[in-house]
Amino acid sequence: MQISKLIRLLLALIVGLLSLLFLIIFLYLTESAFTVWDYLRQTPIWFLAAYAILLFCLALGVIWLLWRILIPRNNKIAVKPVNSNLSEAELTQRVIEAEQAGVDVELARKELAKLRQRRDAGFVYISLFGEISSGKSSLIKAILPEAQVQIGARGGTTRTLNEYRWHTESGDELILIDVPGTNEVGIILDAMSQAEAQRAHIVIYVCDGDLSRSQWDELQYLLQLAKPCILVLNKTDRYTASELELLQTNLRRRIADFALVKLVNVQSGGTREALRILPNGLEEMVVRPIPPQVTELKVALQQFLDEDVELLERLRDSAVFSLVDSQLSAAELSYRTRKAKELVEDHTRKAMLGAMAAVAPGTDILIQGYHGISRHHLMILH
Ligand SMILES: Nc1nc2c(ncn2[C@@H]2O[C@H](COP(=O)(O)OP(=O)(O)O)[C@@H](O)[C@H]2O)c(=O)[nH]1
Ligand SMILES: [Mg+2]
Image 1 (cartoon, rainbow, N blue to C red):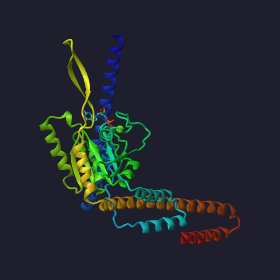
Image 2: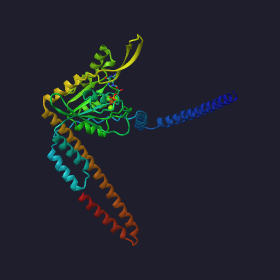
Image 3: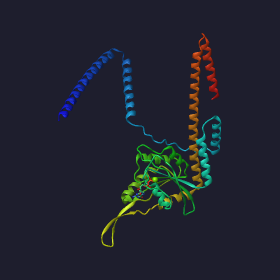
């Protein structure tokens, strides 16, 4: 009781002091404003206008700064169209030239090797994307019941890609790749997942309801790759017919502007509680697995496979070339940045040595001249 009274007193004191301070500041500001206004009235009109513009710009600057601080920047994936003009021969040549110049081309070289290896293997690669728990693993299990798939696995820090071989009824050899999903706020496809999407022939995006902002960002990234894409609405058992219809309309609207994309409904796993009547007349609740229903997906996939495998191959290749192109550009940029840093460090070191050596009058000019020439020489070299 005593303490609460004391706190109240303290609080009242603080409020009183703050109010006093506010009043003083307010009066002081009013006074200065009037003084400034008095001065300004005696100045020519152009000065007044310039002053007003300056104040306006300052206010705008402050608002912009506050905006930048308060509203976090959206880490949206840059939607960059795939550059289809790149050719494998040109890229291979660029890798050789860059390597000769000292650029680290390891990543680009590996990517091209992987492309050749996948081409030789002759499989059609299908990557599955979607948030954790959307049912990617269940979907693979529904398609390949004998596969060793971990269902309900929690997202961890290790992000490994699991590959499953699928020999379809029509004789196609497919590889399904389960790309670990993310569901953290603001986290969308990481570099590894983006690269995997570029390497695939067909991409599948699994969702289990309407798309959140980050899911839409991810799907958009996949769609702009302009390769065959299937948007899978999973867990349809959880919705009534009218809910499902509404959901489909919404999803269809999202993908309306993109070619080569299909929307399918599936039911890939989960359980349902059911009442069972025992022989002795007693009732018992039992948990039964929901029978998977993935025919729509199989049909959509088959349509893509039957349409034009050549096209699948071409679209995949151009996406990988685009990936190699950006890997090379990044490697070249880091090479140039490193070289520029070395150049500056070298020049600074020489300048310091020169300054220490410049004891005799006039030698400093000679030394500076030497630096200028040698730096110019270096710049021509690079
Ligand atoms: N009700 C229902 N649950 C499902 C369905 N498909 C998957 N699940 C459940 O969703 C959870 C996550 O599935 P999982 O395949 O591990 O998702 P992943 O993280 O995307 O691989 C599991 O508990 C599944 O049993 C479905 O069609 N209906
Ligand atoms: Mg999984």
